[in-house]
Length: 160
Image (cartoon, rainbow, N blue to C red; front, top):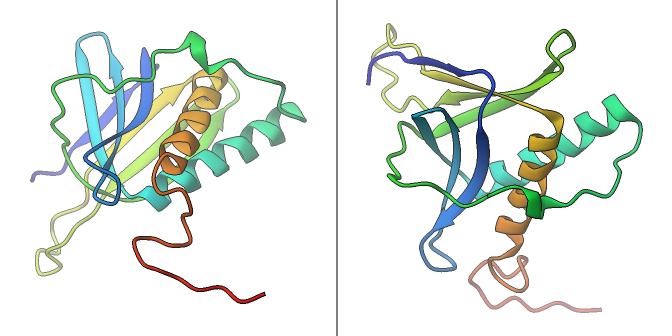
């Protein structure tokens, strides 16, 4: 895949969703702006870590987090679901001038023999409210898996 650099500033929506049965779910980070729809594949752990990082950033910016109603946002994945790449790493930041939070996602590059291929990068710029909704959605998607995430598909015995 050629090196892509995509920037949606600001997004109209952003969400995390899953496709597939429990234990085999594929996690997607998706955002859109006007008629552009960008979908990325992420890992479950990345979804959880992103939710936690957003919470921490918003807490640092605003002091403490107020109660928030996610129901005002449509958090469903949109069709067509065509991920442009799998994410290797993500970061978040805040632009004080525009009052927007940014998620920067970098493509996972598997073929290490092609040193000239730089990974693709996507930047999603969102309001703090959109980010709070994304944080809640990310955690809900992760927790919607197995009843006890410590089991992770195996029988585990615990001693007390």
